[in-house]
Length: 354
Ligand SMILES: *Cc1c(COP(=O)(O)O)cnc(C)c1O
Image (cartoon, rainbow, N blue to C red; front, side, top):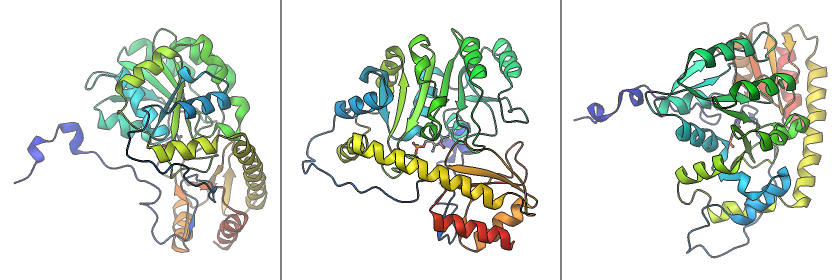
């Protein structure tokens, strides 16, 4: 006997997210998940684990409020930015009825989360320069009342593009009183001037996703944040699981947001950006490569002459990058995270040898 007939239709075709680790093969150099290449050192302060943690650890909220220039009531702590993405979807979309809109090529989780909640997806591809097709977005919003939430990633993964501020300002107007606008700022520490955090105060329909997984080098901790106005944060607090943040996780996340560690993160960001520039210089003009796109994050997108061949060749040498060949506009494209100097040198050497 099988449980198949008990499974709802939308669940039957679900495929788990192709996580970087799962796709790893026999990797020795991991540059496929935009992680920071080495770990900060923290130890757990508390040795009391018998009590439930605070549903929203107040000290952590205060530290992130301080870091982002907001108040604690404008912040939700969750299990990675991914949980924030999902909570907003669940809060504003009804299954088998409502839709989200996003603009490929972009982060894969918007589609995967929507599938698991039987929420429809409307795709408005980016323009050739990876900017937003505002006219097409507006046309969709005008004609399709099912659309309740828009997901826009800035800087965008996997292109590294930052969106024109004027377009985002216009998008805030187009969506006002019409839909929730989610700006996914997972990589904003690499391009802080492009944050929309300053727009929160005049935009109750704006929500910003943040994470400690990228610039803060804590992907293993699973901590993310939603930044928004009180009304939206209260709604998310009503649907999030009761104790999402384990006490040890809150403890380490608080340490990561100390002034000393923030200064360390800022130093690390400068190192990553310098390495990114070096990598671009080394790869520019190689016959194996057709184009390197300008990046404002901790990865670069490369268009190769033979993307699949190059990707597979590096894979067989234990250098695991992310193949983007099947995304719209990204034929022959590969994304590589900026790693340590030695890791980046291995990438450069392997591409030159291909
Ligand atoms: C990595 C990433 C996230 C969130 O990652 P978490 O580890 O769940 O915090 C969100 N959006 C984008 C675009 C990302 O690349």
